[in-house]
Image 1: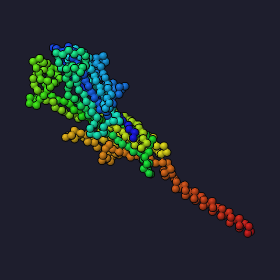
Image 2 (image 1 turned 90 degrees about the vertical axis):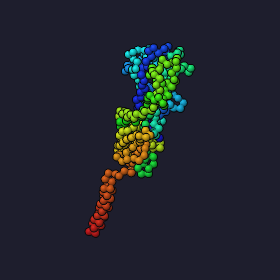
Image 3 (image 1 turned 45 degrees about the vertical axis):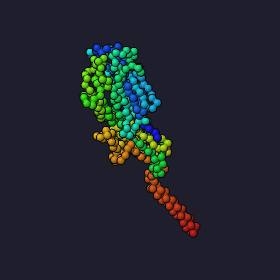
Image 4 (image 1 turned 180 degrees about the vertical axis):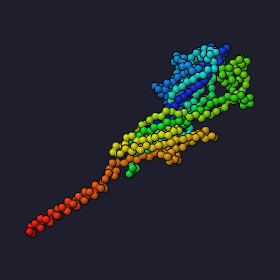
Amino acid sequence: MEKADGGEISAKLSSTVPDLRNSGYNKYCFVMNDTLSKGLTYDTATAKLTVSINGQALASSDYTFTKTDNADGTTGLKIVFKDMLTKGQDATLIGKDIVVTYKASLNENADLTDAGNPNTANLIYSNDPSHTYTSDEPSGTDPKGTTPDVETITYTTGVSLVKVDAEDGSRLDGAEFKIEGTKADQVISKKQVFTVNATEGTYYKLKDGTFTTDSPTAATGANYASEDKYKLEEKNEIVSKVSNSNVVKTATGTNGELSFNGLGVGTYTITEVTAPQGYVLDSTPHTVKITCTFDATTQKPVWSYSIDGAAATSGPVRLTVTNTKPSSLPSTGGIGTTIFYAGGAVLVIGGIVLLVLKKRNSEKE
């Protein structure tokens, strides 16, 4: 089965500059990690990763970026910020937004089920001012804190197409199709929210804005914003991200099938642009409409489909397109031509009979 994959995704990681004034750190580690599921591809050539603080782009010398292709098919992204201690002591930067953006796309491994395609991010940071840190990234023995994971799940669907002979239903390869349309990715952002809860809370807030499960002590108490306990709660936010209209072309494989994956909510037009060898092009455009709602209980997508105005009962939706051989097409004026030739034959035969009769009459005379 040939596949046409797509669906560019704009990803954003965000945090704020911690308040490190009078913190006692000799160096402050600040590392953003993001893991893309195997259904998402980070393209080094076109991803255009950007890093900014307070809306101002950082120079590449202000951080290091590493991309790792993991054995399980996932992709790890890591941004290590340099000299964060200086930034955290600058009153004009403290509390300002840190934003990392990049592009990813859905690939042939994209999950079309309600499991979706997650990318999961967290932040690793220094959390012991009495410790001497020697690098911008904590080593295995350096004390560090890790924020709870923030997960963003992109849900996608697709259209399967089968190309067949109009007469015997056999599968045809070599047909080319294009799909056009503007889609909206269905995304759930799972955010972690800390709320004060004296009875169920297990986290404490530090002065730099991060949280830890370590209780304050006489030695570390000065680093805590308060002795209040916080409870970690998950908050889901549903987001629709609209991408630009695009045109994708692909061909049916040897089994006569192809799939257009990476589709979201939208209306799409699928048109054959090249017929299989020996067949007549079927240039009739087919309209596929995809809608989506989220189940309030499961927070999972519920997809709905229609083809050329008729509701489809399941998805990813399957569209069957037929081709006809030229020999099986009705010829223009074919019946009339046959009658003309038959009539002509009768006239010719009649002419011969008439000539014979004339010749015999002539001989009698």
